[in-house]
Length: 449
Image (cartoon, rainbow, N blue to C red; front, side):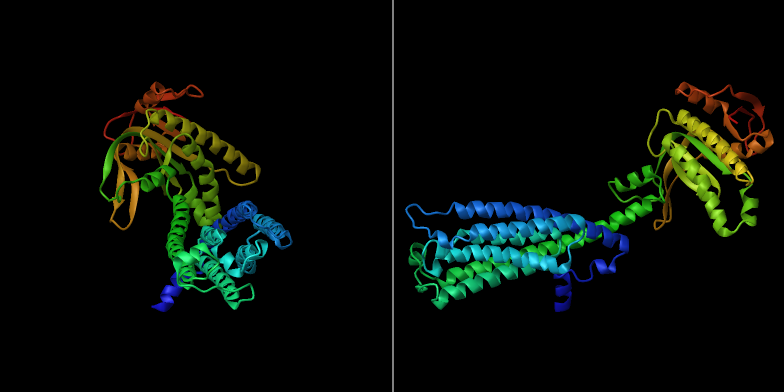
């Protein structure tokens, strides 16, 4: 039980058990936190300087020979600047982080100690200095790093420093402690009240404990958030960006069997001769070829408003207007088709110039009403489009071989695209009344390439 509590408070079982990419993200967050802490320390130094210089008592005597606060603040300021410069350049080492805690408390307790010398009072006098409140600020500063152990170390350092000052005041070397049990006498004279100092220590310890617990819980959330964020970034590479955004923005858990009717355009792209080539190449070369092909085609589809629905080996199924409604779905699909055809021609020329066999593509576009939604068994889901337009596009792409073409679209989709603002780069050949395998009626087609 104690071991689990210790691990929870002191960040045990944390980043060391996480993937390297998550650890690196947390390290970057902590480095930015240290920069923020560095600037905050400089601001606090200025506030301490202002507070210390503004404490001269009306009509009081100040012994300037004991006013070492200026020197102490200058040294601390230089230390903070050096620490800040290092934080900008690289992560701070562990020893420097702890040294910073010691420097914070040494500055604060040192300034408090010189109060009684500056104002020629007994040591008990400095125990009432309101500047002790800055200890809570120094403790809170360590919370910015999201590591409970540094909050605890800072709090314990503050308590240790205050106990040392109390013991010095009680020793009598700084003047008589004037012990009292009277709170009024304590408040109105240089008297020492044990209960009052105990309350200050308890307040520091309780503040430290509450902050440490809060930071331990916040750190768990940070680690979980960073882990899930890294996983989401990785998983987003397996999903279309629009689908990934839909999943992230879903108000409730996505369930299989939920779908929406959409009027969309479908684009299918296939790499000709890939099946034969895959048997002749090494596995690594096959994957590089696919990567080269998909790396050229997919960005063109996405940049024209399409969403990659799935990869079917060397085939690509893309939808326009499914993930997000679009009034120009058909026009976007044909613009993407033109861009893919042009890219395929360049790729073939590059391979030919490199002494490699040129590869061509088969492409088809169609439009119609489909169902867009999640399918699966509950544990493994996939967003996809289902409907006649999807099947028709696949059949039309295969029909390229019968027509001795590379890219086709049915005349209805072509007409719809023109109505949506599509302008063909050249006059397109129209072939009416074609028999497409698997389609009952004759189809009027337009040859894109």
